[in-house]
Figure 1 (spheres, rainbow, N blue to C red):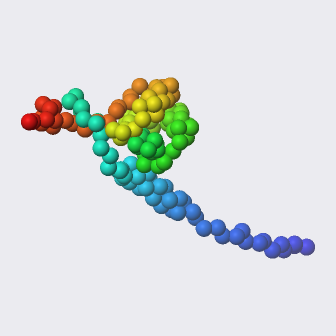
Figure 2: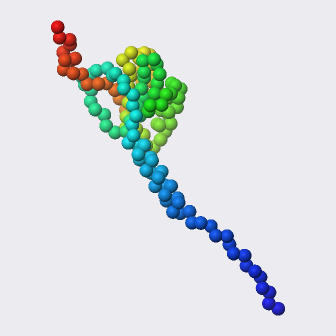
Figure 3: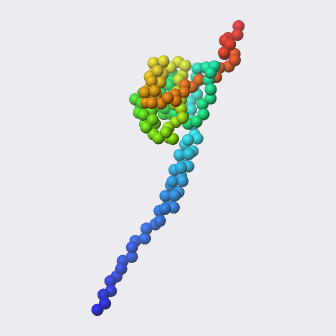
Length: 145
């Protein structure tokens, strides 16, 4: 006797490889475009005669007159900033910022400014840049009578 068994067909599953390709391409697009978008808040910086332009990727820390701290335009506390700095330092070198840019409002408290500088140094960064604005010639010579 011959036994006939009925084979059940395997359920067809869609090929998701093209879908994954599209998702990764979109992910790369958004990561790259996020690097080029920079938001900022106008702040009056102190003047310096030796100010130079800084290029490259930077982590921006802003200290406002009321003591508020912003890290890359997001409000943070000193404790949050410490964790952000440590997490950034723990990244591979290629993913770390070229500079830690500290912008301080002229009326900000020196105590908080020094705490932030100390925090950046304790984390291990040695690329702290303090933002200033260039001084005009009139400003450098003092007020004219």
